Structures are given as C-alpha cells and as structure tokens.
Image (cartoon, rainbow, N blue to C red; front, side, top):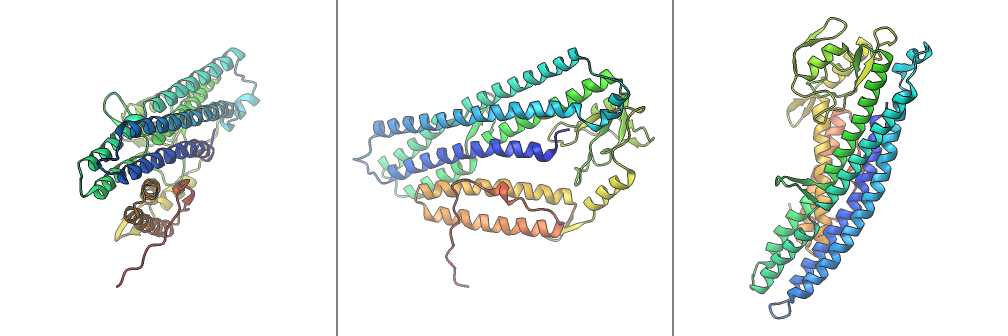
Length: 389
C-alpha cells in the first residue's frame, strides 16, 4: 500500500509548484500597488494601469497552467503506483501463494478505474485553476489603490497595508459558485489525497472480493485521532465494517464492541485505510502490544502552556503553525514588493514567535520538526530592530 511518506512527498511537490505561482501573483499585485502609490491625482492613468494588470494576469495564468500540467503528470504516476501497490500488498501474499489469482479482465477493470479517477482529478485541477480569481482580485486591489490616490486619501499607506495584509494572507483563492472559497494549493492537495485513497481502497476491495476475503483490517499509525484510535489495527467482518461506516455500533473479530462514530474511515481527513482481510489466509499486521504502545505514547501527557495535551493534539498544533507561518511568509513577500517595511517587520515578528512555539511544542512532545513545510520560495528573513527594555 502506498505509504503516507510517498503521498506527502508527491503532494509537497505539487504544492511547491503552486507556491511559486502564488509568489508571482502576490509580487505582481504588490508591485502595482507600490507603483500606484508613487503617483498623484494628476499623473495617474487608469487605462495604463489596467493594461499592465491584464499583462500581469496573463503571465500569472500561463504560469498556473504550466504548473497544473506538470502536476497532472505527477498525479497520474502517483495513481498508477497506488494501484500497483495493491497487487504487492502483503495481505494478499498467502492467497496468491495458494493459487488464487486476479483474472486479466478484472486487472483491466482496475486499470480503467484508475485512469477514470486520474482523469477526474485532472479535470478538477484544471477547473480549480480556471476558477482562481486572478484578474478580478488583482483589478479590485488596483481599483482600491487608484481610488485612494485619486481621492487624495491621506492614509494611503494604511489603506493599502490593510489590502496587502488581506491579499497576502489569503493567497490565490478558488471561488466556488456557492460563494465558498479556499486556497488553491489546499483544494488541489485535498483532491490528490482523495483520489489516491479512492484508488488504493477500491483496488484493494476489488481484489479482496475476487479472492473471497471476508473482512477488513484498519491500518494503524502513531498519534491517531481519538475517534478512530480504538479501532485502528483491528479486524472487522465486512458486515461489521459496514455498520462502522454507517455510524452504528459494531464489533471486531476478537469480540470487542464499539460505539458508532460520525466520521467514516478514510473520509473527512482521516488517514486510515480499511484493507481486505481473510480470516483464512491473512494474519493481523498489528499485535495488541503494538497497538497499546501507540495508545500509551499518544496519551503520555504533554504540558503545553499549562494544559495537558495528547501527542495527536500537539501534532495538530504544529500543522496549524506550519500553515500560519507559510501565510505570514506570503504576506512578508508581498510587503517587501510593496516597500512596506512596517508590515514586513510585523510579519517577521509573528513568524519568529510562531517558530519559537513550534520548537517548544516539538521538544515537549518529542515530535520531529518539519521546518521544510514552512518554506516559501522567495521569502528572506530580516533582522528586527531591538527595542529598548
């Protein structure tokens, strides 16, 4: 089964490409705002500004299309590997050794399914890129700057600082027909993760059905979310797993009973997989001792700011900080391009504080720092002026 490390590596590469386009987008808008701010009521020419905006938007759109094309190719390779890993999964080894096989027609059906999911993901990535509000957002920011200059607004720098703060923090946004919007890189990453899960789980389920497997085994990992922690690593007959996914009470093959939970396995940002298991051919991957060790380590208790937290909660705090740091670095890049030193220093102060907290949490919980997840191309740290005590 495709490992979480492999999936995250592929998603990180996709996000890196989108981040480069996002940086271009923010720099272009900030530079235009700076240029407008250097004009006055008589020298400003909206037609000239709008022509420059259209040129910039065309450049950004082309860069986004190029990144999307590369991302689609990478996703296709990732999905093909996810399917191939189904056939080499150790859960099927004994069944294959006993002479059970997956007919060619079923293998072809799985290949077609994988291609279909890859096509859906590609179309979705293209649509998300096309619905990203590059030109409208850029025009709105420029219109606001032009109005501030032409009206003789005394607090131009303050007004534009607020606009830059909003744009830089939000980054490139996907706008849906419903009015909902989210960051482009976040939306596309979720699509890739969802597609990979679909292929891995569907492929494994089909192979399991062909081989006559009568149960599923839930994958297990350290620092599990509390709702799924009790069931990870356990084996459930297919009928009981169906109850689990429906939120009903259920039991495992060892006779343990569980209350239903709302969040289905492999959905709603769950990192677990339900993998086919045969009560005839398969052996549980996890022992009770291993699963208990996961639980004990997670609940050892970590003191953060006077409150005891699980390692899962600490890891979630670290992920949130990583995201916030990237947003502040985006904003810092935009502030630099707009020549707003005050805003740039505000960003650096926040980044320094968050990274200090990040290290504190990692050390207290014994977790690995992933500072590479806070990297934003084009960001350069600055030294802050020391203030008198």
